Image (cartoon, rainbow, N blue to C red; front, side, top):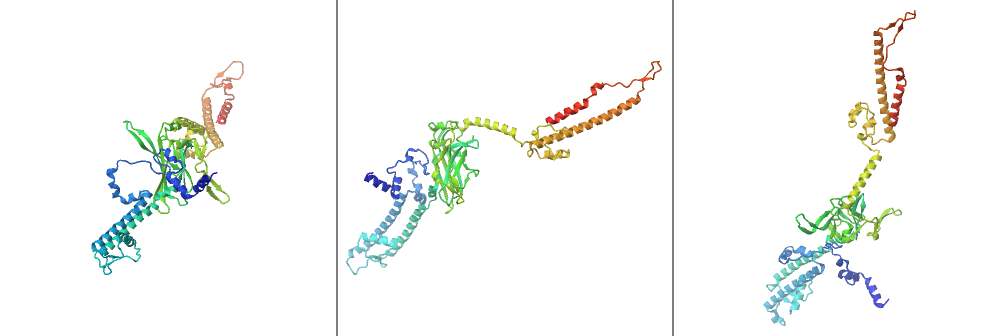
Length: 502
């Protein structure tokens, strides 16, 4: 390594040298020069205003804010130049008063009383003006109260000096304490990721706060700047679309106690609905993300912002985990060295609009599958038929009055397969018992009626003339003995199979 390289390496380690290089872009490539974005990564706008010559007087009407918005080099120039002009102006006033009084014609006259003793030239008057306005007073020059204009001029100079010091030093202090400096310690990830989250495509951005004192009531929102053409053919090249971000289930409110991943769900209402990775070369848009909150230490309002171009959105990636629990110390640790690390997940080539039909079909298929396997079903979807004597299952009060099992009135969401089978068998058993009781009642009624009919009928005698007893024909029946054999047994067996199958 040569001597020059060694010297450059040592100089590069000095903080002041690094600051100068970064501030004036010396010897380093500035990526913002190639990155043609409306908002820089640091949050500054890259918008130039022209045609304001006739409106410049309005900036003087709001002079204090104009001074605060000045760059530091111009602010320091205003501070020094205003004080210098003030000293110079009052030096001229003192010199003019002495000139009119004739003090410079009696410089070596010991009997002459000058307006300002010890001032013999304009340089002396300039020094006396600085001493008077800053109340230094070296003791060699002092005003003479016998001179008519000395006391009023001294009063005006000191009053104006106090006013200028308060105003100038005040706006310098405000520039130091500006809340927008707080955004320097709020970090945004260099890239945004698009991955699948809970079945939908989501745009993700990681944010973090380097300080222990966090923003109070911080909120996040995004803006997508994209060309828009109305139905009438009017084109808006910088049309703003609202982009909703949320962290976890907190909505727009975030708490930056640790780095969070902001999610924007790409739905039909999202401006990213029809954007796909292949639009990087043909589509021009810019995503601006803003975080706003109140400073915990001063109570001032602060906004931090950044932007992402299409080339800075990684499709099919997600952020790597940087939170780890330290079991030894019993606390969580955040590794900011991996703040921008991403992990490849899958290859996404289509927009959310193009993937939506496949997503709906998959969700429908999963829904049907879950409905087929789910045990939580409503009473209207019971697999078996209710007896006709029971009221509608939707009316639980009538169901209880009808004497139905209490398990049904609670619904089938808490039943398992065994309970439902048992309930079905109980209901079929009750139905079978009722049918058997009705059959027995009908049989008893039919038997009694048959007996009464038999008693009323007159028997028919058949006398054969052979001396044998008379033969009486029994009443004829419509059903033969062969048909009635096993009828009850077959019906009972059929009912048993029905109950078993149900």
